[in-house]
View (tube, rainbow, N blue to C red):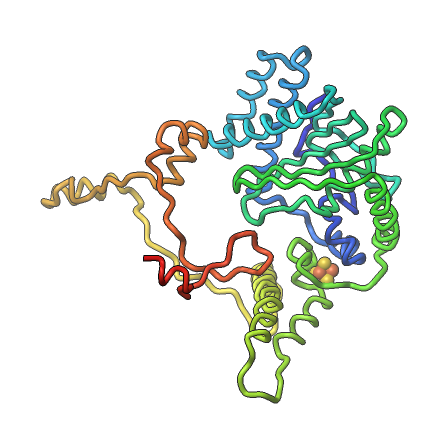
Length: 390
Ligand code: SF4
């Protein structure tokens, strides 16, 4: 096993992480290759978390080569950046523990690969990827992926990125191990999401056939541009004509009758309207960047926003105010950190151990979410059972 320079993980044109998009919309890979791949703060934070997680899992699974001393040195190197926070330690500990618990479930200790480089070119031209953790033995293959994002919960079921990693791992190990069952797992600690999906090897290989066909089109930029929820991660999303046409058609579509929409229609509008709103935002951001770059966007221009005031020297200003009779106590307020800030400062585990019993969960404001959301639906309607309970 060897450590991976995560920031140097090159991206293939048909990357495994983009498979959900280019499998649905095959021309997207070539289209988006024209736009720069800028790395966000969140992505950099995710990279750091992966590096810390890698060091901890290497130390757990291969302590002879990656001993305690090596681990401490590696962690000290990684924890210097401002992207590091103590909660990252808790989340990466939880990931290592998840991998450890998974390995202990096997009847015979599995072969474990940490940050395993995988050649995916049997299925995807020029394709390669890096699986966070794979385990093989007892006729099983398991792929575990750490997701450090905290936006949308990622599901393992039919997840093309993990299925591609599983295919790569299968190709790599099929001569050495008899693999019949495959399990793919997502571990997303920041939003308490773990998701696993098991399949027979034949399902994985069927997927391999489909992905090979889609990849053959995608590498040539062929096929129909097909907008969908995968557009949101496409770098061509602001300028893509297919997406614009779909959203314009939807946004300006009107019916003659009847005068009032049904709840079914409203549900449909809300669902499809989500992408219209996203698309409009993408267009605004893109047009602003073009105006700032000196290009003319018909009918629009960039101006300075409202701005805000700030001290040039706050200490000096406060001193002067005190000299003018303003009491120091009136100039400062002492505010406790919010619960979330405190948890971030202390780390999730220590927070739970120390003050977990002093935390109460208050119900949130009712929110409208798609039906697929895992939370239980609520209503204000009192049922007969509740009304007569007392
Ligand atoms: S924005 Fe959507 S439809 Fe357009 S190329 Fe990208 S994925 Fe395809």
